[in-house]
Length: 352
Image 1 (cartoon, rainbow, N blue to C red):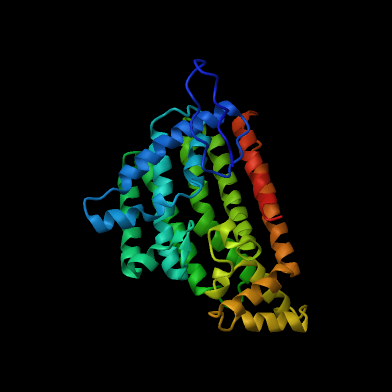
Image 2: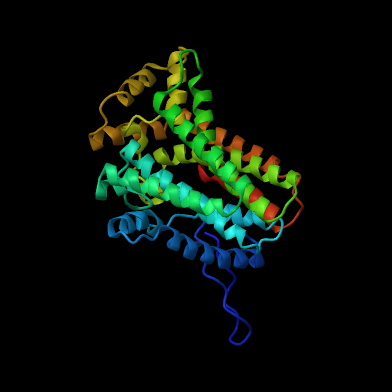
C-alpha cells in the first residue's frame, strides 16, 4: 500500500494526507500527497453523490461505497490528470463518475454471479435481495449520468459508449462464445469490454480534463485498456491461488457459479485439442458438476492451484501488463509515467 510522506516536525508545515487506499505504486512523495488530498475530495463528493432522502435507497447505495475498496479507477483518473493540470475541479467529478459506474456494476455483477461477499462485506443482494440490489445499481448509474452531464457532451458520449461496452461484455460472458469462436479469444474480448473499457475511460477522462493533448489522451487510454485486461487475468489467478482474506472474495466463487475464467478455459482448450491427461478430463467433468458443497469446491481449487494452466494465466497477465507499459512511450518522463509503469509491473508481479 502506498504511504503518504512521513509527518513533518512540529511547526514545519501541515501534516501529510492519509495514506492512499490503493495498490498503485507512488514513489514520489509530493505526487502521493497531492493525490491523497484530492482523493479526500473524491471521497467527500462520492458520499454526497450516493446520498438519498429515502432511507432504504440511502442505506443500500452506501453499502459498497462504505465497504471501501482500492478506489483504483478514480485514482487513475487523478493520476492521468497530473500529466496536465491536476488541480482542475473537473477531475474530481470525473473521478466520482468512474467510481459510481464501477460500484453500480458491482451490484449487478454480484446478483448475476451469486457472489456472497464483495470488498470484504456481504454482497448487497444477500442483505436486501436481488431486486433491491439491481435497482440500487440502476440508481447509481443514474447518479453517474447526472454528474457526467456537467462535464460536457464529449464526456457524456464517452460514458455512454463505455457503459454500452460494459453491458455487451456482460452479455457476451453470459451467452458464451458462438459456434466456431475461440473461447479464449472470446473471453479476452469480454475482459476488454466488461472491465478494461472503464479503466481506459478513467485514464482518458483524467488526461482530457487535465488539459493534455490528443496524443497523451490516446496513450493513457490505450494503457488503461491493456492494464484492465491484465488486472482481470490477475484476478482470475487470485480467485484460485489466494485466500479469501487476500482477495475479499470466497476462493473459487467463479468456479462454483460456472463463470468462465482463463485457467478453466485453458484447461478446456487442452481437452478439446486432445492434449489433456485423463486427470485433466476428469477435472473438467468435476468443474462442470455440482460445486455447491464446500469440500468439492475446495478440492477442484486445490487441483487448479497445482496445474500448469494457472502458470499460463500468470504469464498471460504479465504479457498484457508489459504491453500496457509499452503504451506509455509518448508520455514525458517523470513521476506520473513512473507510477503508471510501476503499476503495470506490479500487476505482472501480482500473481506470482
